[in-house]
Length: 171
Image (cartoon, rainbow, N blue to C red; front, side):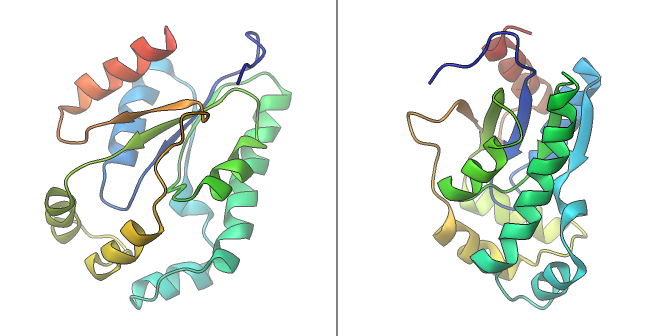
């Protein structure tokens, strides 16, 4: 899978809720200064309401959300601007939608110990309740060998993860 070396890079920090996507994305953003979008901000209110009630989202709930993230990225791609977004991107089909945003899309999958992630979810104030962790794990499809991306361990210090991402991309 090759991409145009001149294509802007679009980093997608992905993984289940509580895996540290936003924290690491912000650390990378601080280093690169690229435009950033928090995927949660793109959810329609109906999706947020379902999650608050502990109801897992369906594919039908996710398609419009994913399309809006891809459109946001595509606007910047057309201007030659690199981006950083956070999005669970749990399934390969979801990542295929996100790749429509730009040829230079690269996924950073935060994968970690379920118990550590559950502790993080319990310790934060977020609309995604810890009760939905299992449904996210059931939905998750790890990156395939033919998908541009890398796995990172959220147990590592945030600065170390950011450095690993930048090194992998030669930035």
